[in-house]
Amino acid sequence: MSALESLRRLTPQQRNTVIASYLGWTLDAFDFFILVFVLKYIAAEFKTDVPAVSVAILLTLAMRPVGALLFGLASDKYGRRITLMVNVLLYSIFEFLTGFSTGLTMFIVLRALYGIAMGGEWGVGASLVMETVPEESRGIVSGILQAGYPSGYLLASIVFFLLFPIIGWRGMFFVGAAPALLVLYIRRSVEESPAFLKQQERGRRPFLTVLRENIPLFIWSVLLMTAFNFFSHGTQDLYPTFLETQRNYDSYTTGAIAIVYNIGAICGGLFFGALSQRIGRKKAIVIAALIAVPVAPLWVYAPGPVLLAIGAFLMQFFVQGAWGIVPVHLNELSPDEVRSTFPGFAYQLGNLLASGNATIQSGLAAHWNGDYAYALLIVAGIVAVVVAVLAAFGYEKKDVRFGSEDAGEPHRALRA
Image (cartoon, rainbow, N blue to C red; front, side, top):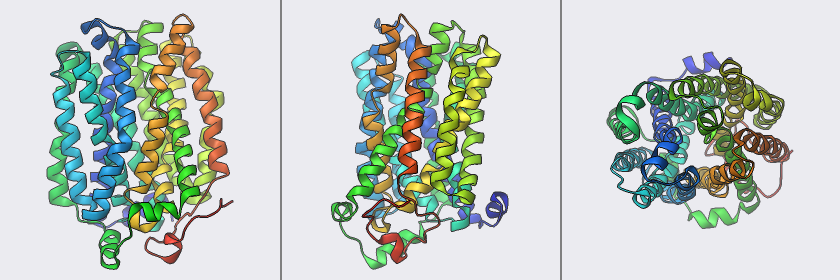
């Protein structure tokens, strides 16, 4: 069955769930990426430097495991739908309050609180949608869900391109409160996960009990997500700063290039998500990650904005192509009883371990006399290979039926 055919066979309720989960991740990412476009402007207003402000990115990422654990546990106990609504409302509120920051300390504290709320959304939304759609649709739906991340980046790029000269950096964060409206759609149009309702009838064991039975899987998942987060954030977070600071492009050129590479990211997630349904999750990740390596030099060393945009499009096509497989891959590997907690917590612990990326890259660039290009290239090349190796020698349970005995059995050894 083709990817498009599998989408056409979704029921209206399943489509509503996919839309809600996609929008939740899109708007969450939109709120996060607003910051990467305005780092230097915040630094100027608070009379500090970009590395100091980039600590806010570090803390946002570092606090996401807290949110993943708290909201994941709540989702596994009380349901995906209500937890997702609370989650979206909270990250919208903290985003809005960020615009009122009176100094760097207040700004960083609010971004840390936002990180907790942001950390919960992915695991809750991914489990809700993966437990709702049929097995044959998981690959393309995974690509759609993860495409929400570059979609949010694209949305932030468009807002920066069109509105930043008018509303400034504070106005960007005020616009970031708009996702709160998504709660109304979820409340009206989305039903609870069928798999969650069945699990409620059977009862569930504590998270730590299930975790102890799956220690090798969990450790591997965290390591994989650490590499993946270095891959993603290492190619995205400081790229606008590289364009503005090293290439001296204005906000319009920077925004235009960001729009182009986020379109590439969306296309990549959809393509490789669908491809993984045919060739398997691991093979698709390895292919996408390894092709990113020869693309990287064009991405940072192209001589003009047009070629840079082409390189950035290709780079994000493969980076987010690999990422497009993550939602389905982790959810298929997760034990039934903790599907909302396990994938999100592993993902966000990987974020924690990779949370120093922006500070590391900006520090390396400063050490190399402002050479952001070299700092970006080194990180991207190394982590692309690491992602491919970890994926190739890891686990896979493609198309496992949720609620079956195979889905709940402990993972005690790597699966070829």
